[in-house]
Amino acid sequence: VQVICTATRPMGGQKPGTSGLRKKTREFMQPDYLANFVQSVFDALHEVGTQTEGGTLVVSGDGRFFNKEAIQIIIKIAVAAGVQRFWVGKDGLLSTPAVSAVIRNRAGGFKAFGAFILSASHNPGGIEEDFGIKYNCENGGPSPEKITELVYAKTQTISEIRSADAFPNVDLSSVGVQEFSSPDGKRQVTIEIFDPTEDHVAVLQQCFDLEAIKRLMARSDFSFCYDSLHGVQGPYARRIFCDILGAPASCLMNCEPKEDFGGPSCPSHGHADPNLANARELCERMGVSADGSPVMGQSWQVPCMGAAADGDADRNMILGTRFFVTPSDSLAVIVDNCHLIPYFSRDNKNLLRGASRSMPTSCALDHVCKAKGIPFFETPTGWKFFGNLMDSGTYAPFICGEESFGTGSDHIREKDGMWAVLAWLQILAANNVDPSKPLVTIEDIVTSHWSKYGRNYYARYDYEGVDLDSANKMMERMVSMAGSWPADAFETYELQKADVFEYTDPIDGSVSKNQGIRFLFQDGSRIVFRLSGTGVVGATIRMYLEKYEPPAGDLSRHPHEVVKPLAVLALKLSKLQEFTGRDVPSVIT
Ligand code: VG1
Ligand code: CO
Image (cartoon, rainbow, N blue to C red; front, side):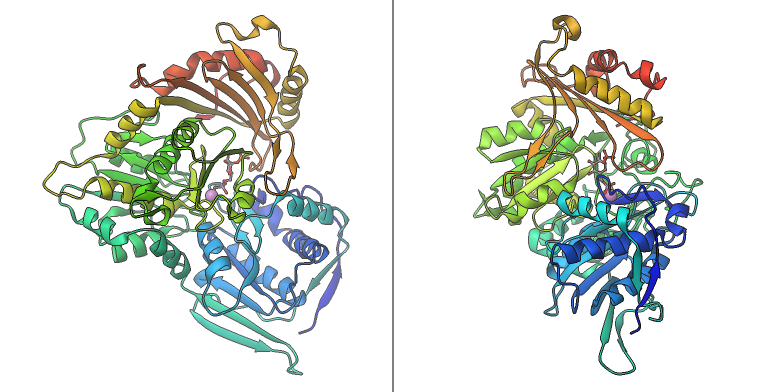
């Protein structure tokens, strides 16, 4: 194996965001752009003492345009760094949760030291759209900030790429083991191509009682549908819902992974993003409008449950018949009912030892944790912040989630779109053991949750493609105002606290500053502002609005109506329109 060193120079702008480095695909396709980043990751790993020589590395992605070419580039650089064994999903496909499962659990006696995941998640794919790369560590989770910061530092000083350029391109299309050795026989490289579903499915089989879900699926009064939005989830959905759980193939929608997730002409317009705005085909089938309200009068039987995943299959959306479950409520309901899921219970007793939500996620989870005495944590946005809590052991088993359609547990170290759907199916199955009784629905479960804990009305306004400078100025002004807001700035709301969210990791003490601006009010209402860390052009301002209604209050209102007065106040506090020129959000989720 001959290592070729090529001179390179820093390219700028390679700072990993909330979930890795995301840019326009064409930017990634520039000579050495991807190689620079990958080399910087290896440089960072060597600096922190990660042994790559003789090690095993996972490389795969969500199948978007440039996925396969990127895999070949990464393998050559990794070979030069001494990596001996590669684990790659067939056709270069692995969902984000599957990568996490593979790092942690792949059979065969070898352990991977990490993974490169090629994905820009729910962002559209294609030569004119987005591409992304993320490095996950030995625990199966996203790199913590100390690594991403070091990688960024390396991208700013990089001068050389070390690549085994003569290493042949690997055939990704057939399952099996490919062995390569250097002419002098001193160096062996093994490439293992495997069915992308096998390891992840094996982990999920350990978490759930799939036989019970199979009985639910078999009920004549139960029906289910699932939309993979042409992302990487298709093969996983087919394997689990059809092969294992016995659902008919007709329950699957858009289950062929595509490089452009179906492109502009498909119902999601190539946005493999499981929310009310983009997963329209599924929502229509389920009788749910774009603002989450029920739509009546279908000529078809509306299924009992509908669900969807994003491009890399770590997100989930849960729908009942003409009923939308907000991700924050979904998290709270799963935690409240986790004794029904084998992974969290023994003899019907709750074993859960910790739960967490990201700061902007609604406080619905807080009520459950308080009532049940479950240790609770509020972390910054992004899955990497759950990692230490899950690894600590003290809080395992553990459930966590975000308002952005992400839910999961410590069975792996990524959010897991399939896990969330199985969790809901398990809860439904446990509520519907007797086939002679009428079906307990998703809506029943959520409304009874509200009548027990109250309802956290919630909405997120996104202002996309805003001028970066204006967005920064708007945020800076609010940061500088913290502590000095005039007493009458909040109208009828009584301020409890206005601050800039900062997180101290309870396990390693690391501090993450500047994680969003919060306004907390006496009645439990909240306004939160953040700038997105996953966007590719300009800035996206996220404005999160929440109002708590106790169990005795009106629990059946439309969330958008309820938070409207908070939106008006939030716009006034932020001077958003003045700074950005925007009068309406790009999308409300
Ligand atoms: C968004 C979400 C965040 C999520 C992140 C990655 O980040 O808000 O909750 O963890 O995407 O999800 P941001 O910085 O744009 O708000 V994924 O499915 O894109 O990996
Ligand atoms: Co994703």
